[in-house]
Length: 142
Image (spheres, rainbow, N blue to C red):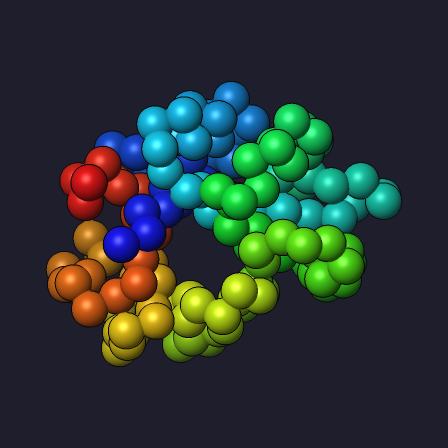
């Protein structure tokens, strides 16, 4: 099972730290993949959930195999498509397919063998049939 830290969170939602490069590195160093929110703003890459907040730290590219890039605007989606990174785009779709073929499944929606169950703690979902889990409390699923 693939264990994915949601924006760097490990044991609880910490909105003030989400998507900060050091917070992401901490989760990677503990052995987790990390879902990060990325933007293209004025031809630079930024991290941040609701808006571009932190300039992308190029040291993160060293860990690209551990990162799941959530494209937050169409400009970054086009850029990610030209790189060999694991990315996806969604708004409130039940399921979206990532660039590596996983089914990123909106919280509370039906799960499948190839699903990444997102925030199962919100709907008390069982993740045993899924390929992976993305959670704010990912250490619970270790």
